[in-house]
Image 1 (spheres, rainbow, N blue to C red):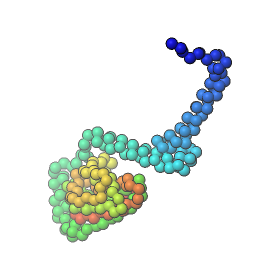
Image 2 (image 1 turned 45 degrees about the horizontal axis):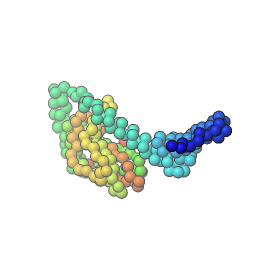
Image 3 (image 1 turned 180 degrees about the vertical axis):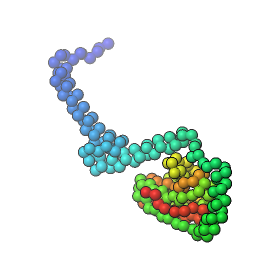
Image 4 (image 1 turned 45 degrees about the vertical axis):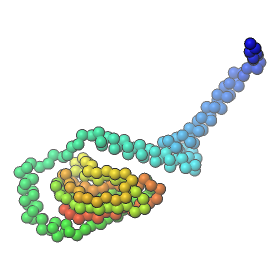
Length: 215
């Protein structure tokens, strides 16, 4: 069987040629790393070329999604905990005082619906919350116009601890009753994952105070 002839020493590439080819390949890889990979994967764009090509925005979305997924994972993995509440005796006294002192004022305002709206740019998030006592209830209805949103209905205690009541993705609205598990601020966080602005409008009636947009 005939085999091809082995190349002569003169036909083999020299050490200089090999080093030059290796240098060219390394330089090309470095350019691609800086102008394409870093902007598209990590939103790092030192040259500005990635933003011109639309890659930096892709990287910003990826890093934001990864950060939110990690936050959701940590929140789901954390044991459910609620701030220590008052003793049964003091809680009973607070309920009696609330019934006789401020119960009348709340009864007058509970039937009057309050409404707030917030407009979210693509990728932007915001929340609307209300101050509520432990066990207070609020009837709510919210809707998103323009596109769908991701949301998390949750409460925040004065000490900073949070607990989630309900979550959703690609939602255009929701209705129900929010029952405060403890005294603090309770409401909704929305994130616009679409490509167009979204306006979220929430209407609430019930036992609460100070419905406001939390920036």
